[in-house]
Length: 309
Ligand code: UDP
Ligand code: MG
Image (tube, rainbow, N blue to C red):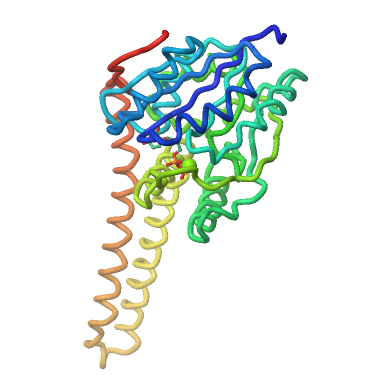
């Protein structure tokens, strides 16, 4: 018997049909360990709570937390990390896209000293062309903008040593782009590879607008370069304007006639400057809204009920 506790955190949002199939595959793997399975229901409105509690009644190593409403995937994971007692903690999706079978390999890497073990997608055949492309561009962009390199093809399926869990739990910030925060710590990381499977039942909860918000969060929390970009654009358009003034003055002296028309140039100039200004205000606004959320210090989630905790 292994002499450590393994925690498995599973965020669930309307996954009623996936709970039993997931446990059927997960529990045989966990029987080699001392374990706890922590389901965090992110405000599910279907039978998810009932399904989980049914299993929790029979097996007290299955624990359950339920939020009042949907606070988001990252908040469900954040809450899971706060309650997990394990020496190592694995986060896994409920929809069986992450195969539980690789847990053994992850734990073995942890035993040999890795503080972070990422499960990396070998193939993504099941994801749409669009999702693959947007994900690839997102990682390229964030790695260009941020000083913290975030590994690509890595989602929230990972193992963390309890030291890193403590680090995450002690972070005071509201914004929780967890894969970025883990990478920011620079802990020695290892990889295991897996084939991403199809969702067992149901649809993805990450719609396009949610993906966009998630990407924005990642960029704003890990880079201030967009602000610098705003300054550069300001310099650039001011420089163009300045050159325009010099051109106009010289033109007036050298060519006093034929210097009246040109509303196209005027129109283009106004649109350009107006666009740069709005974009710049928008960028500043994104950062200010983050500051606003941080100073409000509202709870990150609200727990409605707990079972076996
Ligand atoms: N999830 C959650 N809260 C949300 C959205 C998703 O807890 O607001 C959970 C969901 O139940 C699943 C995991 O997060 O276990 C990943 O979500 P999903 O499969 O929809 O995302 P995808 O795999 O398509 O990126
Ligand atoms: Mg999924």
